[in-house]
Length: 288
Image (cartoon, rainbow, N blue to C red; front, side, top):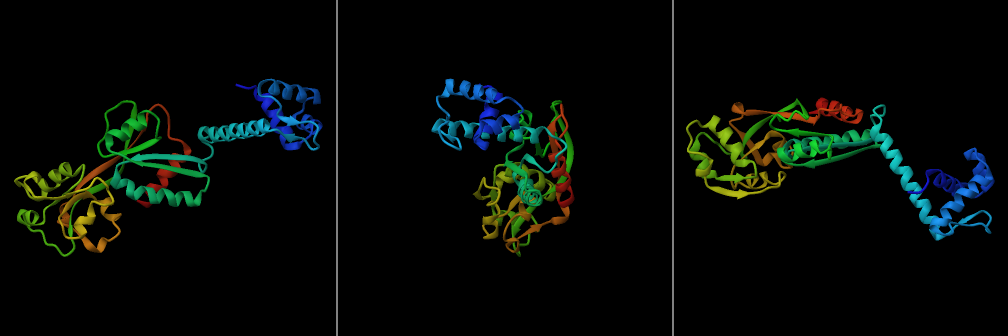
C-alpha cells in the first residue's frame, strides 16, 4: 500500500497545479512535496508533466488521482458508519419477511426523501435467513415472526400482524364446504399459516391438505392475484393484503377471529443500534 502522505501530496498537487501552493497548503516544504512525488513515480512511472504550466497529469497520474478519490470516499463512508452523532447520513439496512417488508420499504423510502443522505438497503427473506444475516453483520437489524433464543441476538416486540383468510370479493364463507368449493392458493409459508388459522376458525376440520389446491406462488406480491380473479382463497398476514394493488377485488372472511402474530425486531446483542437505525425504527413505529 502506498504511503498516505505521498498520496495526499499528489492529490493536493493535482488540485492546485503548483508545488509551491501545495507545500503551503500542506504545511511542508516544497522539497518534501517533490520527494513524495518522486517516491510515487518510482513505483508507477511519471504521474505529472513538469514541463506544463499548470502541471498536467499523465495517464498514470489520472489513474492515481481516481484512486485517491476512491480512498477519500471510502474514508467518508467509514466515518458516517462509525458516527452515532449523525443520524441522517449513511446506510439503514433491514432484512424482513415478505409481508411486513411490503409495508416497511415504502415507509423507509419516505424517510429517505426527507433525509437524502440516507441510503436504504432492504431485503425480503424468511426467518432463518434474517437471523443468519444479522448474526453475520450483513444487515444491522431484522424482523422475524418467531422470537429467537440465540444469546447473540437481542429481540424486542416490534409490531403485531394478524393472519387473515382472504377470499374473492362478495364471497361468503360460512363453513368448510365453502372453502372446498373455492380451493386453496398456496405459497411457501401457506400450509403452516393456513393450518394455524383454519384450526381456529373451523375446529375439527380435516386439514388444509384435504382441500383442492388451485395455485401456488412464491412471490408475496402475486399470491392474491388468483384470489382476486376468483380462483381460490389464501391465508396471508395482513400487510400482504394491504399492499395488494386491487383491494376492491378481495375481502377478509371471518375477520373478527383473526390469529395475531408478534413481529420481533432482532439485532446483535454486543453493540447498540446506530443512530440511523434508531431514527428509522422511530419513524416506522410512528407510521405503521
